[in-house]
Image (cartoon, rainbow, N blue to C red; front, side, top):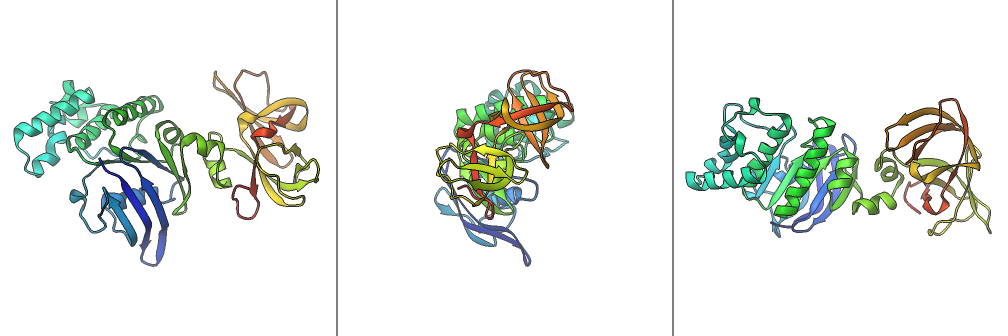
Length: 354
């Protein structure tokens, strides 16, 4: 196991910069998830850590040792890819032990490590099968087993569950998290799936356009997003964001561009009257209230345990998440209020949290 440190890491393709100075300190045994939209640079960053992409500038250290110029095989890392990268002509056991064979490890030791990894991942019945005889989840476990047998200091996962169906993704999330809790190997995991990030990470790194927007524990990021980007990206559905101004001095309120008035009673200091702000409220912190602002229901999405309602308020859609079942239909007029203690304010120009 080892710590990983990224200090002012930058990446350019010719004259085109794609990673703009990333600083991350990852502790020994920590599970870090890099999350962000497509094209934000998360996979590029992971490939630089793996040694598959050269670093244009900055220092990458693993276990306190700078590894910028070391090849992948000398970085003491193991990587699990999105497409599994299994050799189709080899058995499961041969796939899992192939990297050790290339390094000249003797057959007895390879068999010992493969057997131990197979027990951990419940792959013993499949050791003599070839990849085409396995399900997607079993192939992913083989790819994980290949990483485990190397006994590397750092595990790297590049969107490993994106090819699986929803039910299997949930099962594999639990398996990977349980595996980490058992082995306590430093893990860096890339995904665009917020559910994976929220449920698996010790800390989340939110990336946007090659920059780190926020680093923190999942619930800290969810409860106190550092910017409108994080507020809108983290959470499903994302936070409702309304443009407007702060009005009033003694009892300040938020006034949206559509004339929606919302109270400001949170713990955060309230900006001076007249300041342009973005008011954020999560869908689960909106409630039906006859004293609230009017909206017209556009879409109702019942899932059984929850009901998501999309309603039109003024010129924009508002998401409302009910934990209970509600008898609402498209076209119906309702009134909504926000829980003021759960409101978030962001600067209108910078998008940063106030």
